[in-house]
Amino acid sequence: MNNTMLLQRLHKLQETFTEKETELTALDREIGDGDHGVNMKRGFNAVKEKVTESSTQEILKQTGMALMGSIGGASGPLYGFSFVKMSEAAKDEIDVENLRELLEIFAETVSSKGKVSGGEKTMYDVISRAKEVLGEDGALKLEDLQKLADDTKDMIATKGRAAYFKEKSKGTVDPGAQSAVYLLSAFTLEEEA
Ligand code: ADP
Ligand code: MG
Ligand code: MG
Image (cartoon, rainbow, N blue to C red; front, top):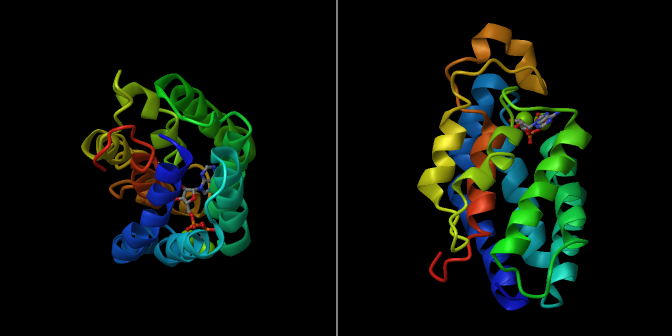
């Protein structure tokens, strides 16, 4: 995936998060404060507006800055800083090997910044396991990623706002896990996505 395609995919997430606003808001209304839909939409509106054609590294960095600067909630710095960190390791042309490396950095950044590990019902549960569903050809399929998000349904939240719901957080897919599905699917190396 070269810089032009990456930019196209990131810009397209603006449409995706506009479409998915209601869904993400509904999830966050169950176990949070009901703003994850609007947060992600606002974040990718900023990406569409501010990130323009440049190198792969610069596109990822600018995306991170746009997300950090526009998302009010916990997800802003977690996603934003992760993009900045990924920009430092990105190759001009992202191939499978590089994508594997970027996923590793994404997971490490969320883990250290969010002080989170697996099974705490967050975006980390999808991001850290994305490598398990990454195809040898670099495919990251929506339906495979969705299964990872669905696995958060039975978990009890111990991080973020959802942790206040304790046992009651069970039964709902984590909103950040769901947004991570859409975000990660933009990195698939399949041509048609
Ligand atoms: P806020 O909770 O501040 O309103 P958002 O609604 O935008 O922010 O994002 C909530 C999502 O952020 C959660 O569903 C969860 O996936 C993620 N999240 C919150 N805190 C953490 C954390 N410490 N580590 C990893 N992810 C987190
Ligand atoms: Mg929220
Ligand atoms: Mg909030």
